[in-house]
Length: 271
Image: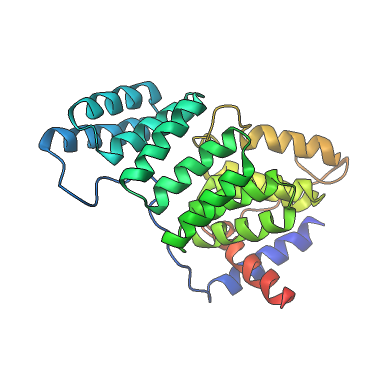
């Protein structure tokens, strides 16, 4: 069975090389881009905040945002950083308030996506879906907004909508581990054990410890174990309960761009 999947992988990747992938907008919190330029002090704090995001120091990020807002109370970046840090710390209602203020001050695709993810963490899927759509109106090529849309549809038990959205996210940014993680979850919910395990493993291969959008979300390693148990597949096996060799990894980048070919293939088949 694995030989068949290896053949499909290489075929799909070959097709993908003929595709032109649209590069998504930056997914991190952006620096101030409109209105009055920030002061030197605010700009320094914004840069320190981005360093805190990179190091995943959420308490430091929160402290930076608070310090920034004391000196620059209408700076949308500091509100966005505050909401981001509070969400990572599991303080969702407070995060939502900060996210909303950031949108009031600077409504862009990133701001709406940030608030949408907070809505997801709180289980408010309709609100998350609305924010995903608002984000995509402002930037139709923003991959994070498609992943937000996928999780919102998934929470609303619409696996078809979720699958369509995550295919777009992966096609736009195939090196983001979170998109493969979400795709694996959706595939498992549909009973597609093979695709679920391959997608979750791909997420782990890219970055097994990527920063989860909220603290209570299971990581891809935990979800892969669940998938293997649910599907009755032993570790390093290809058939249910039967040992099989691990398929050889294609050359670097092949699996990462596979999803674009899958998205094109599936969409052409539905037309």
